[in-house]
Image (cartoon, rainbow, N blue to C red; front, side):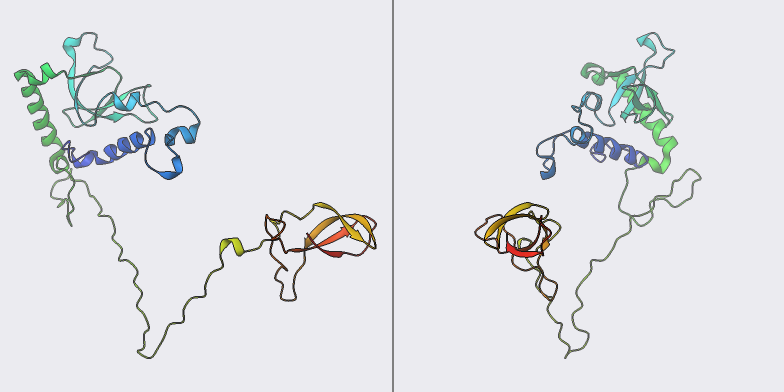
Length: 259
């Protein structure tokens, strides 16, 4: 987006902010959103894109200052997206020919007829010349170079290059005779048993005891000597082999019963 519109390098952070806002307010192909707008998922309100779609990024527009009352005093500027968390509602960020940004709510499109006029072409050429003279090297788009600015000018800005990291690679055995032991196989998620999540715990049951049915409460799962749970829990009662300990209401000893 910034390269297609010849956005100066010093404005790329504003462009990224604008692009992020557009992505947050439009449907994307991310699986987790399930076809919903991300902003709607976060806030619960229907997302509105009118304040983002009214003007394109870094396009010529007319704007008026609050003290101006006539369209004869409109000024040419570049639209740099809406203001976030400051200024009036629906206010836009205008880039002036003096390389400053102002907050304006009275913003108008440049019509196709105006864009073809010689007067507008002269205004836009003067605008670009003034902007380039004030931004100096900041006017150029960002490039992938070791040193973007040479600090020869006091107005030059220092852009730090993003760090690059080498991917981790398996170096293998350090000694020719050394062999690496294979990693142990992980258990399948369905085979891992958790007593805290067992659906039988604290359930009231009625089980046979001494020739009659007695009621009690399932307290925990029965464990082997090594501490592992006995049997495997399953949603299908036929496949459920778990063994639980039941505390009877009459205060009897804990009984072991298949649940």
